[in-house]
Image (cartoon, rainbow, N blue to C red; front, side, top):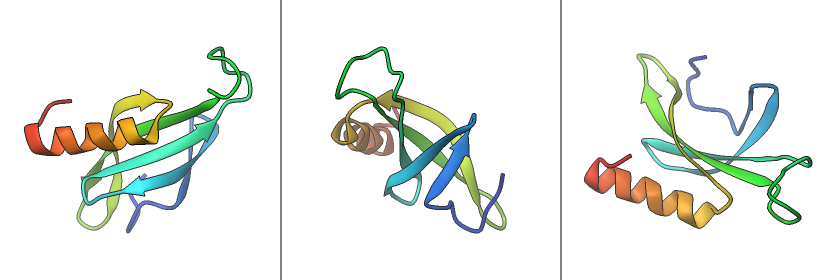
Length: 86
């Protein structure tokens, strides 16, 4: 789906994801999974996506990382931007 800008929340595979962080080329979305197998307190999933620029608009690109840490996802986005490492 192409949008003028990515919305603050998206439904991906039937699960609502909320935008937690955004840069020009990356977006971090978070969702909550009450049935997580990772244990109590680890039910949130943080996902780092590339943002694809379209003419006009934007859409989600490749999923680059899934983690439970917003800080880890931001650090990974910074590393990808600087080094091109995915």
